[in-house]
Length: 496
Image (cartoon, rainbow, N blue to C red):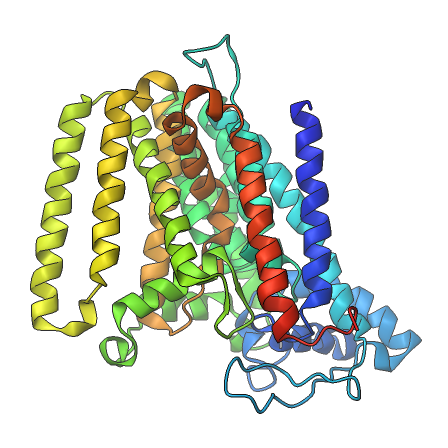
């Protein structure tokens, strides 16, 4: 099939799988669904955002809730029961904890399911923007073929759209879908900034968007917003030298004006987004080194990135998650070589091995001082084996010779990925919410770095089928989650 038909197939599979998750997972099982729902109900019925005492999601920016509340207002006028919240008690089983839906107490909650379904098109737009953004970053001349578009954008769209956790969170009630869409929009716009000279008013508009988006939509967009600001400043400096300071000042003032307007419109301090931002920047939990060990935090984030349903231990097996993470690491190592194409391969690997040695030595010393730092020995061995595999493969075929790319643009992708990782680390110091979905507004750069690395690591004949390989693997993961986890654990009114 043509690439366009494969893209439509990915979107079709995404839609079917997302609808499946929205029906197979009972209401309120996805993270924070009740709190987000109460926010919308408050806006629809009382015309005001809730207070923190009414729902702890009151600190979220109100944009998403303002957009969906008119529908709830109409439903409330038709029949108040359509949006009335209802949930049964928690189950008595020890694990996994779930709401005790039974044939006797089950109700089809139209308001909850409509909110889930409204988020699904936002996820579809996220996939499209990711696809077109990846196309801008990887339009290159393949050494073994005529000038053409590589299959990397299609593989990136498949990796984002069919990722089990992305599907589960998209088919849930939250403002995550809007945040993911705005993150994908910034990724697509980043491709424009990196490859096309823009007019001064366009740069000012992009700066204003980057400054305002975290406060208007969700703070998890911050890594993409900061990357956009860096890219705009870079282009203004290079292409608008006489006026770049004025452009920078204009964008800052416009963005700050939007944020101030949001603060003035907020009826109470709980709804000012920078309150949450400030606490996340300066606060450190007192129980950070005593509540959970480091490896437990890491695996919880990894599970929440690849596939974990609801809040409990219902998700992909731990060993499978580690394998998927190892494959992602292989892709990132190859993408690092694409970034440092000007450095001789031998020198690059000497530096990498030196850094790995320092990391292992520091880890050994830390474990001797405190068991909190301990990482299972098989994981360390597996990491070293993956490193050896990447070294052997790159010596056989240097990635820098297979896929020439724009170094400045690739730097921006790595900047976004690095900022996303720093955000996760900072969030871990502040709150015990170890959720991999916080990375999803940066899925474009993270996934593109993986797929580009896989493309140059695979044998040339197999590399052309990278999108199909990604599609088959992720379909298998979703089928496993449905048959082995969702259906056996949670109440399924649509199956019985």
